Image 1 (cartoon, one colour):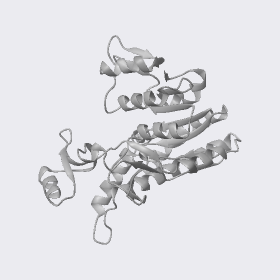
Image 2 (spheres, rainbow, N blue to C red; image 1 turned 90 degrees about the vertical axis):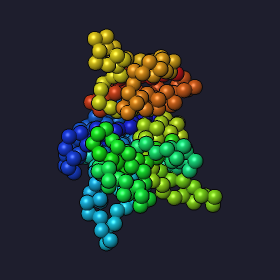
Image 3 (cartoon, rainbow, N blue to C red; image 1 turned 60 degrees about the horizontal axis):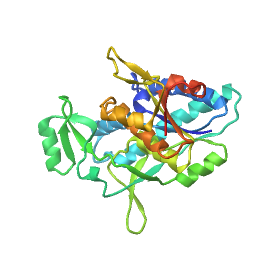
Image 4 (cartoon, rainbow, N blue to C red; image 1 turned 135 degrees about the vertical axis):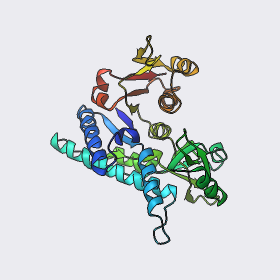
Length: 310
């Protein structure tokens, strides 16, 4: 069975933001991935990069000078896609070697095409990078350095577009790697957002793409059997943290939409995961989407996690 597995950047940068601290988390992910692969499952892995690219922007802001200017956002996305992909690739190679599993692993820097007419470019809302005072934010905005908004009482941050993914540029390459039996890590951080001009040439844009939406788009384009979204809990719950909290082991699209209408899933965390799952399984009786924790990955073939079906 072909699985697209989506791992969040916040899961990697859990508590310790150092290189080694994040690698330690990735090594544990690799242990669970190897258990899953050992059961005969095919895997294509996607990952987030939100906190990592944010930290990189802070580092670049502090060290920016005429000789070492800040890189554009699409380049920063590519840089973190490469570094996190490298961590996962190496950790998984080592874990598979311990299990005597002969499988090649590769990480692919991936571009994701978005529409230049996506409404989010006219009304950006995604905060990113360092915090500024109101005065600093106003000065930067007056200089044409972007739009800055107050963020939860912590200061002002630049806000950028978060357009919907239209297609995975390297789809054919990814498909070829899958056919060759190579475990592929791709679409990191939602992929590098790019647009095409009239001549069909690609150009990076200042935006970030939701990792779960890109994972869903990838799963569709490579015709995966299963979309697995890894998060911090073993199952989805309704009435979460309430006396009548209820664990969901399986739900249909209709049931999921009912819960969304009730406001059961927070917009900044579980909602995009459920929406991606719905889009993946919609009109496909042979597909399923599963939302669960990293620790539960190896138990998915046994029925663990929350399964969303058509």
